[in-house]
Length: 137
Image 1: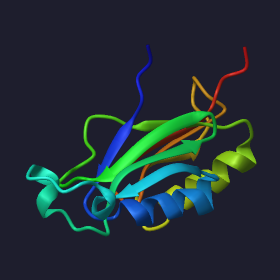
Image 2: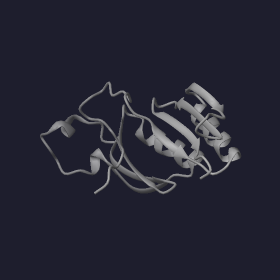
Image 3: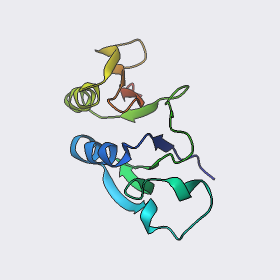
């Protein structure tokens, strides 16, 4: 058993996937649009057919699922962060800058008592991220 993040976007899932591909090296494993689903009388019946019903991407070694939420139009990413573990300060700076572009820095990258390089940012899509270099063991 394992826990897998599933992110719901407000009509910006495709944009987010593309951004993560360009800036975090994400790889798209699968992507389905609402218009590709069989006809339904459930919540998806009123969804925009061009929006993403399901996607599966890999960022580093982690699989993240994402879609445009057809039920809650005011989805917010609250109460969690995705933690991006990197191996060098240059990689941390590059990833942090990409995530901060159009977003909000909550804690700039810097050395902490638990990491040689750590920072917190909310990206342009509202997803909370922590970028960290693990401490040397």
